Image (cartoon, rainbow, N blue to C red; front, top):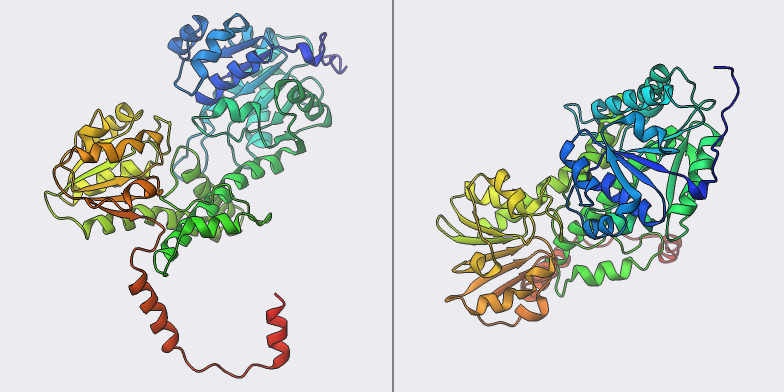
Length: 485
């Protein structure tokens, strides 16, 4: 190297070409979304199947809208297993590979390290400046101290001088990855140097559809911010679930009324504040564990993250106890919802799946149905549960029905129940069918998060305050100060 800084590119950013390493749900969706904005995109993967499918214009994975978007923009999409080709044919490379949890609760970098070695070797063969962007979730310090040295060693080049490096995670939800990627609330850019961060920010102005604001910062701050977003969201979910439990114990209690009100406070907000069942999925459950690991490794504490994780884990057990009180050996229970969320086939850390498995251990006969996740759930349940191929088949002869996700496919439950022969208890974790089932004489409707017995709940509150000790005298100034809050 002659020490000169390579030119950013011979082409303007508006004409940049992109490569995406990792054609999973996020990577493939990013590739299709960027192509839909008019850019040439090369996908890179170790899977010959994924490469072949994308080359043929087909989606390598299942994700809402992905197949149609790839088919529509296939002329701007290509795929390869050759990193050198992908890097040579692009100006920016996004790395979107798995970072699974390891035995410590941290995120494994094995896949990322392998990708960075290959990218580094490709950079060694390329003249000119190239920007490498890590998107996968990692812990603070991983980029600068574990991955960036690999790029420099393999390429023989220096970050900030010969190539750029940024950490820029996405904030997406499975089932809406494409929409979320193109229309984020904000973009997060962790930069090793100002040049790389400025370039990536400019790239986003051309890629994104909504002109979202960009926040640039150090790599470590960005790595922590990504983890912080997910752990904070889980805290809101768990808090809403605790409110739901309280609302069941007060006369007229209704968690939706409470959360609709407090969500109007701009300091709180309504998103992710719907009381129901535990959170699940491939990201949320592991992020609190990772934050706890990080805090412990750095001599700090993450007691809130620990409490959030433990409370969430207890949520399914509490639902199992509720069902156990209503059933016995041989009782037929229908579980509606095996994916961790509606409109998804993903069953990672799914509350519905955990519920079905736990009920079989009680000797209960369990049937389950999900519009998308039956194949994914089959391997996990190992024939312990009867997997029904329709809503009607699942609830036939069921004495208890549990709705674990607010999937629109379950709106047909009232009609399906009319074909049944006996009374049924419906435990609706999301109050999806309150209007349809609350007054149905054949149904004992149990909406999680709402009072079921106002008389008993009122009596409980009456007893609480009748038994309260006599109020202590409080200085008038203290009363005025308290009333002002």
